[in-house]
Length: 314
Image 1 (cartoon, rainbow, N blue to C red):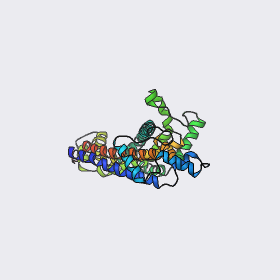
Image 2 (tube, rainbow, N blue to C red):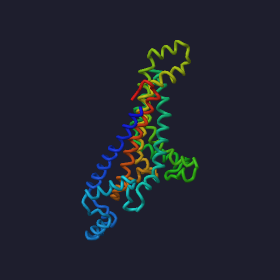
Image 3 (cartoon, helix red, strand yellow):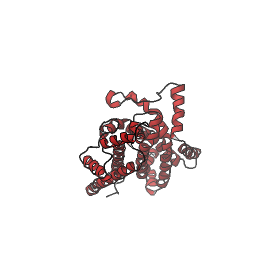
Image 4 (cartoon, helix red, strand yellow):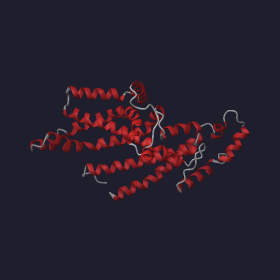
């Protein structure tokens, strides 16, 4: 196990390096110049060229890449071209809203998807099972932005129960009531995501619910709830953990839409503004952080497998 973890951690660095190279060259292939965006449409070519020299954008790509990688190795992600704020500091200041939004959305998806999938499998071919399967197909087809706008119209405009936009940091205020800013976007993202969890939970439970060890537990007089949760669900949980991990990563990427609809100060909104401004250091920094998060979360998922199923060894 330790050798496996060491190998996976060692693979983190070349993965992040490849993402860094991809992000650097991709950003420089995009037409348009940050200097032209900053100076506006009235700027002359001479003004743009002068600002590019001051920003170091006139140097050859290999020189820019070498400088950036050397700074990156020392933990320096550079400064934003527009705000002149360190990129890492800017990302960390926006990460709270994005992480809490994805986590809350995942909790909603799991609270809806896992119990529904278990009940549908236990009551196979019943009216509830048919309703759950049909509802999952319908819910999966709902666009998050459309659902978010309708939730905003109902709960914010008509009922005035929840705010329409904005976010107050929990780290700065320590007030858990600030989570109310995330409830609508989290439900708009979590409800469609629950469909995949529901269908996978149902299918994996159906695969194990008639196994010999489950029937043996019933024959020994074990309560049905313990048979389902302790024996059947635990053995069906490995693929469910996989899809939950995938769902969390998917929610992190889909947060771009929700953050712009609800005007949340998150990484998704940050990267949209940075792309519009051609803010190369911020875009590259966000891509690197997200890639590292993907690799680390996949590693944690593999570690969880061992605790769920002792037969798994690396």
